[in-house]
Length: 352
Image (cartoon, rainbow, N blue to C red; front, top):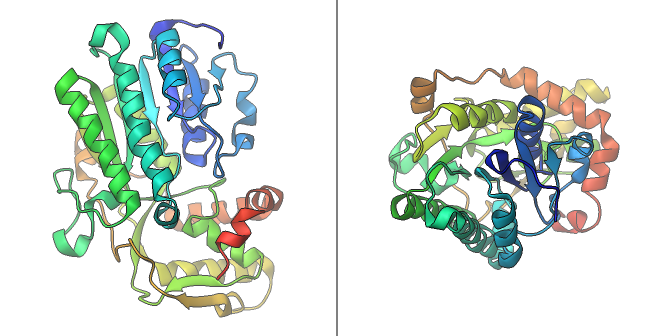
């Protein structure tokens, strides 16, 4: 087993090698040395341990490699380390893959959630007072904005893909453990993220990768698809804020009130890369290619983040176009990283 530490200061984080989890782990390890962080993950296709190379020599970081669906192992490490809190980040988080691999998604998000919750329940003779289960969920569980207006925390779920169905199942199990076993939980439903070191199945790094490779830039035939974009650093700040300050058994919508139609977003990328690659104005717009609308997607998602703004005094600090420029520049400076994660099966999966 891993080296023991203070059982009152142990925190479990799942899939910390992804861009999302790696940022949270870095914050906790560096800012809160009194906590010992255990990064549990199976390192599937989207995991990249290079995102955590600077953590390897930290005394308060450990990497138990396994899946959250391994019931025996998960229960063993909970019994061994008596985690004070668990941060459940997504292992798979892409709608298209959820449709082609629905069993994998369901097993990870539903069965995996239950195993984590049961392991928490097994501590302190089923008493969960003082334990916190933090779940990062999605705006997509709410369905389409056009049906309801902005998504509020009390908006009912409306599921249209395997992805949102598996996510919502996890959310519901967490809430039932809160009511049944008095588990302190926190769920944040967030809008689309962007940042460096994000796997290029996601829209922004996919556009960046395709422009660099001179490949088509797919846009749905209904080009009016709109999304709100939210820098991951902003969400990372809210995670720490809610961990320390919020009343537990709460749900918060988290987003940056920063909406873009996909067609304008891809054109913004094209203009930026025209200048960056010195390939002539309008060169990259020629790569824009209409594709059939994907199943399971809604034209418009939009969370109302007023509650966290009001309760926590928090608001997004990132300026989208400025941060987007920094993000694209990072990918250009790290083409080796991009080529490495987008090799092999990735190439076949994203052929147009």
